[in-house]
Length: 270
Image (tube, rainbow, N blue to C red; front, side):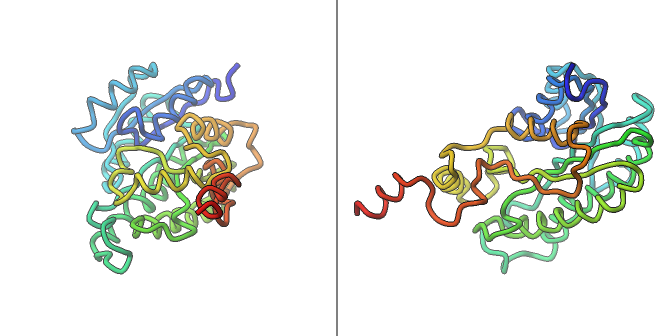
């Protein structure tokens, strides 16, 4: 019996098979969860429908998280199809690509507003609207963040600020929803070659650096992120809420270079 057997999970943010949300959906499916998916716009509809079908689901609906009408429609969709909900996966973040080219000092007012609305407020809005569907279910909510919320990652810019706000929202929401018996946590994932990642100037250098520095010397996978999400959404994690769990092969614990042989090669042998 899978860890999520009989649980109903709504997955947002799948864009393609490289998406972190896709890795989470695969792990959820393996552990017995029923899945439903959202897509942000008509351009993504067919792609998400094909991904859902590959994971044994025909429950796919549009939800632009900047639209209260779409969020209302999502609630009605889930209520009609399932009548209840156990898990919400919030894997939604966005800032205009121009906001990643300079520094934070170059952030535009409009870019800041978009990043905060899509990446942060959407979690609050979805949680508030879908919470009644979790009544009596000991529900679990997961969102995705990144180390750029804690330390400066050049060119991550306004998204680092948004992720810091997202992590704060997780803590405040954890307090709010605990009275209803539900939990919420964030996964701080190491860099993954997703469609969104390539909006960040110099992303390939970021991948190279984090791989070199982390203790394992290799990039994280969406499968590893997905398996962590399974644990956090399972009854095994019933005592965990308001946490930010790092899934980055230990990159966040490092202060300088990674493995000793790399230090010798790059510093002492020069």
